Image 1 (tube, helix red, strand yellow):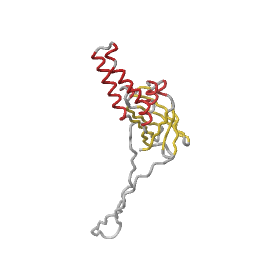
Image 2: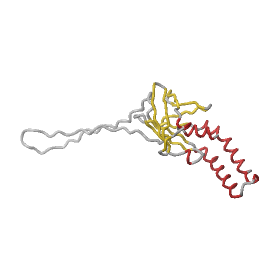
Image 3: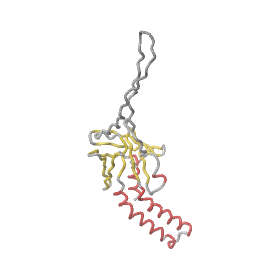
Image 4: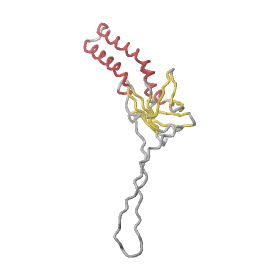
Length: 198
């Protein structure tokens, strides 16, 4: 289970919206020549606000949120087993304090499972971030940075740092996503993760 949790944590990101600026207001031009006359200010006609431009469906730039349901379904039996093992810890020689702590930790991880989230933000400059929370440990969570490139429907994401420290090994492995029909997805270790644009 630890291997799978590390796999997921390797690419899971700060959600930041992309804003669109409005047009500059029209500037009044002062009249020239002739005798000065009292000026009568004529306010410019109001223009309806322009809606934000829609995201380019063919570009991966933006913020993506994963459907964590498949991963939750896979992890739940393992965490339920962890609770059962913690409940039995008292009869296996563990001290009452240690057994109580193990049980509390196991129950918290199981309760937190439904709150799992994975968000990926891909910026136009080829960088991005990963925001992930999952019932494992503080070391598995926290801000992560990434680098990414896109070629057609293929989006290649490489995790770079976690909490400011370079990632290595499995956590730094490049992942290949497919961008199609408004979804960005990947399959690894038998699990298909689907991300949708926020």
